[in-house]
Image 1 (cartoon, rainbow, N blue to C red):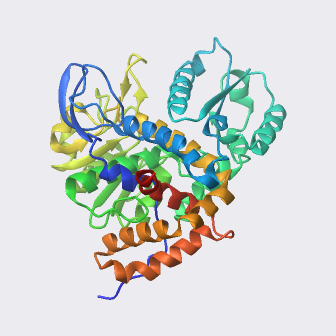
Image 2 (cartoon, rainbow, N blue to C red; image 1 turned 135 degrees about the vertical axis):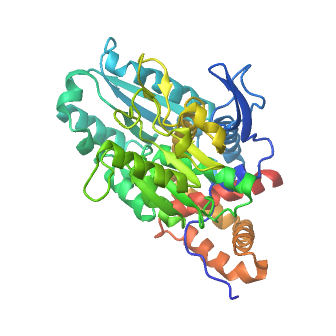
Length: 449
């Protein structure tokens, strides 16, 4: 069979992650006084709860710090000072506003994680009386500030600002080269189309990574050259259609050859009917087909499952499915987070995430990682020069990745690797290709140092 030329993205961090022996991906964990096995671990160390300490976040963030420190060892990249690059979060709301209390806690977690990666965290707290015009002026300043790697608005806004400011229009003014949270609709569109872009939305990207690592390490599925598992042959259900999670996840999964079911949503039905019995039948039929469930419904199931806090019940799931549950809705007492999947249903799954310590930490890790990449975008000329200085390493690593994916001899992939190298260093190509390339060769450069 003739070698088939590859033209999509190549490189990134996931090749290193999937090979890392220290990362204990499937763990046993006690959660809410129940013992769970086959947990897909997004968090780091939780003392007394986890049999193995290394989770997704706890392996990636120290690696970013290690790489940040190593940049000074690459002559062309010595100009980059990671500690001078800021991950900016904008919080709008007053100190005593309960509407932003949870946001303050989340911002604190993001800040601490950012600092551990070697970058600087920057938080702008603005009063709820701020006007749209004032916020636009500030955004223009942040967009133009080269010290800011990425910037994001912590939504929703509190107080009067939450009622009067059109946050969609606001987020559409974020420079796409700094849109680390994927809130600009241009970023969303490019992600859904599978086109060249600076960033992906953090939550769907984190969900894809968790699923990819499981499929590669536990099921032996080939890792694509872009660092995502091949989903060909799998029926994948997306439950939820939000603009920054379900919708882009549904669209991008098609790019990875998945047979995508859904997305399920509150108005799902058939034949023009969406009464509770019809909805439950459709939900169940699709869920029972799914090899993988990406769930981000995040709402109380109302009339579908009266008396239950959970959307997916045990009878709805296929045996040995994979569950990536991104829902963390605060229902009932308003304090404890609930996922979409009933805990009693997890026994049917081959592996699953919990509503605490699963997708959330992976989302934060992706956000910080994109801040780290944003720093490189700010120095794209230097990044391309570093690739040119290490041309033989880039071509060698590219050749190995392509040959492994195509299951062919490296001699067959050499010409393709050379073409992708030229794209990465060309000044007119999208910067994402150069940054992907640098990320994938850094382990080799660090080993040689």
